Amino acid sequence: MKVLNFGSLNIDYTYHVSHFVQKGETLLSDMSYVYSGGKGLNQSIALKRAGVDVFHAGAVGTDGNLLVELLKDSGVDTRFIKIFPNIRTGNAIIQNDSQGDNCIIVYGGANQAITKEMADEVLQEFGAGDFLILQNEISEIPYIVEQAHKKGMTIVLNPSPINENIFRINLDFIDCFILNEGEAKALVSLKENEEVLLEQLRKKFPCAEIILTLGEKGSVYAGKEGVIKQEAYKIHAVDTTAAGDTFTGYFLAGRLQGMDVKDALDIASRASAVAVSRKGAAPSIPVREEIFGGGV
Ligand code: RIB
Image (cartoon, rainbow, N blue to C red; front, side):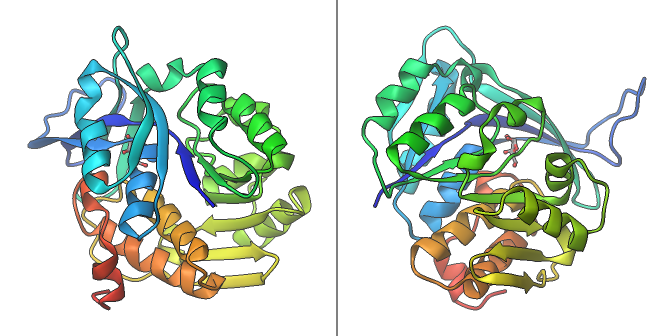
């Protein structure tokens, strides 16, 4: 069984700010950093750091070599990453405030230049029983989902960032959703509390496993194994960027390594707590030993 993550790669320009910039305001930042990021890249790194071999497919421009190198150095298989000579690598502008919260603008760049032909080239190397992990920062996701489903791959979708493109995907083909409250509300067009939200998600996607992340309130799984709740680990928040990606990678890794849902939720929560306590996207993702060593 192989694991393919077809996902974004971004250069993150992160600015430390006292508060998020308001309409018409010019705000000074006292610190700025450049990090490797992109929901796709972060999730591949989390999977690999959690101990799972992963193929990352995606695209960058020639300015994105550092991202490919980071994935390679982390042990991720990068043979399916295309380097476009004339398109910029995707990037993100991230404001990180003094509470550790963030807000993010993403420019798709090469992530949005993925074609059906490229998807076919990649997917021909995978088949029934292999895992496909997707987020919502690359082009041609509806096509990728359709083709992967035809092949009998197990499809995991993190519908992030949520926007109208998600509704172009045949969501009945998704085997597992990992999503936050905002994304869940958009999927079921509801503004309800988490209990009702979970019920609505289960009604709408009865065959899928659903993992709803609730920030400081923890996370909850609903699916074949019933409904299982997990508390969040309390930690001083420095930067929440990539906390969700870390959770996704570690949860999936746990399940792929044969853990039951409760244990997989637990290690995912530990790992995302560590990520929140550190600055940046990819650099904040812990390695397996930090989590299993009982540090959190
Ligand atoms: O989830 C965090 C990521 O979202 C950042 O690394 C940024 O690149 C955006 O994709």
